[in-house]
Image (cartoon, rainbow over all chains, first blue to last red; front, top):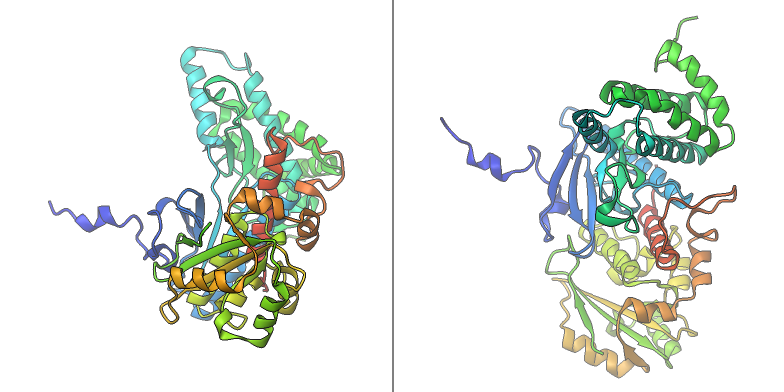
Length: 262
Length: 204
């Protein structure tokens, strides 16, 4: 069987952005979506890690349009991130960007996404034979922290657009006790604002919550019953949250997309 | 204290950065005058160190200017003026020089020289020239020394960060950023400044 040795060398199918062809600590491809590649790289110093989000150009798009879309998306994501950060919403800070070249460097967030931690925790509990609803303190705490982080973001006029447990990170808190505390400990950091926008519409906010609720239902069904904890903390996190929760009931009835009939 | 030679991540080795920090400058108006006169002997970024909060703050501006140089996107005369402009949160070049550049009143001065293939500069030559023309005491280009020079009130005003780290009223239990407040605060301030600088010029 033929083995393509070049494959193991190139970490990504698309050519590296020019920025990563310049001397630095080698970048590592950590995620690839439809629109962007995410690398772990370094900012200014070899000792300062960063996340580099690169939006390669799409060959099927008209070059002018392609450049415009890329620029627009990089800038709007960076704007939303800096806005959140200024207002104290836990998100990665923006280090540098080159919208023409299609990249943005942001703060590297340590830790793991909630989806992974939560599934590990749930499966460990299942193995230990702990019935659902028992010793849920840690889980309740996590759900509440998620609710208040999301509420805080909504409170400053930002909607995420793709709230899933893969876009919530748990960053270890250094002060926390021996051996890093529990699996569900840590500070919630919201990531991936690629689909985010600035909006204070209850409809948009409710859709964020609905998407998150569905994400819990589909990937952590054992934790779904505790989603009320998310909503409870959300309700207390900003003025007007209760109206969003009303709206959420409406969204649940009809789904994420608004009916365009009539 | 000697000139420091720095190579930044994602910058070609051909573009070496030299940095020197001075305090108790006595001839700021002379140096300022050389810039205004366009004296080519003084191809430096002369930055008022009282508006620099950390090494990273300065390095971020240098990186942006060099990256813009490499991408042929300089908005000002050369890479050195671009470094000063890169510190700015807005697009007003003249204002950025007034705020971040040397003025006759400057007492602490950060000097940056970028050596490029088209105008290479050797460290020893830069050091000996600076020793000759800058009437001041050369000190370590370090966070600790910079911090003692920083005019925080002015920095916060320039970057419009008057409410420190996201305190925008409405009773905020600051659960977001850990416990250790002071060093945390200045790290947070740095992060916000880097964000403002990165977004400068973002139109569309």
